Image (cartoon, rainbow, N blue to C red; front, side, top):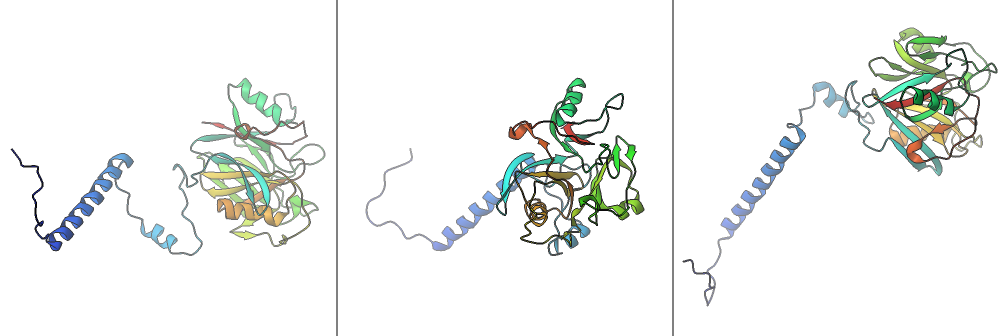
Length: 301
């Protein structure tokens, strides 16, 4: 039987080299165990970055982006309230891997969607439940979109590259679109005309808030022109964020919320004081009917 009593007298001197080697062995074993645990739980070791990805990471200010069909890069909740530069916002993050759009314009018989509640009713009739809805952009007195509007591959209104007054014509303006494969984008209107992306859904509005990471040249920091505003920005080719301010905000601060909070490089203004957002995940109070020419709805896939 092993003697478990401690010997009396002085303990033998310990070899510091053996103690040091033992510590290294234990550390290496812990690292190996952690790596194996990651491999089996994550489905394999992470792949080495491609030459293109490595080059992109070396470029200052350039962030990694998701590819179509991937889950995306945004890791936060789909719906959230937040404050930025002392302005409060509500947000919904669309992910084409999990969500589907409905771009509403007319119900059967030509009746216009004049309230977000009408879009929710239409979705419910089809057995769907909307996660988010907002007005799609600027419209004329006849409740027609001022610019391009595409729903389920059908062009309701053509692209408008004319000049005029008001926010829509504060150029550069642009188009938010989604292709049938789920790829998302925002293009300046003339670029959209040139590239002709095969949009499954699209809405044109203006001004562009961000273009290639640059704020619209007409926006000034500290501007007293403060109103409620709504817009959409591109996080990655599979993700877009919709923002609506809780109160008055100027264009500069509104643009910076997209760039600094969600790292968008492209963002588009949708509309101003009449804007609404249906966000049941945030339990926002119901708002009364307001006339909209088009409505963007989001449901689960």
